[in-house]
Image (tube, rainbow, N blue to C red; front, side):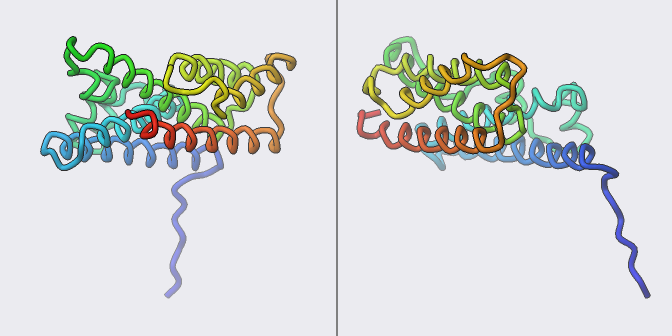
Amino acid sequence: MSTMEVKLWNDKREREMFDNFAELYAIIKATERLEKAYVRDIISPQEYELECQKLIAHFKTLASTLKDTVPSIERFADTYKMECPAALNRLVVSGVPATVEHRSTAAASASTSAAAVAECVQNFITSMDSLKLNMVAVDQVHPLLSDLYASLNKLTILPPDFEGKTKMKEWIARLSKMGAADELTEQQARQLHFDLESSYNSFMAALPNAGT
């Protein structure tokens, strides 16, 4: 007896849409598990904050990409019977980790530092995610790198010659010489992603050394 292959999509665009749906589903589920782990003291506040910030950044990029096909995240969660209230509150309503949201005024300076670190993490991930989603036009890439460069400069614990600052400054200068509608070549996009990943790893490695 022969078996018939059932196609879930008709073309490449439809396949990408379903792939993005699957990723959105995974992000919401992961956030729900993370929120529960934090509430139950299974992970430390520091681990929670960094992981949560990554998920929020991934979510924002994906939600922006899917805004036409998924206008309501709550309806998406309801359609697939996800039952993830904590994740929806964190991703859709709050938009920041619980540690940042609940930090006391007495810890204002620490809060500022933690918020600046969180902003850098989010900008790194948003930039890398955008390249993965083939957003390679100059008017798409330039604002992301500018935001990243600005957030890195806010963090006083980083040295002036920090790798990420130097590389982002070089890329911004390069993009400024191109037209808004110009696109990065495949080679340029791969190099930029490599530089972002390398700078992100250096950034994460620098945090413990700075006593954060």
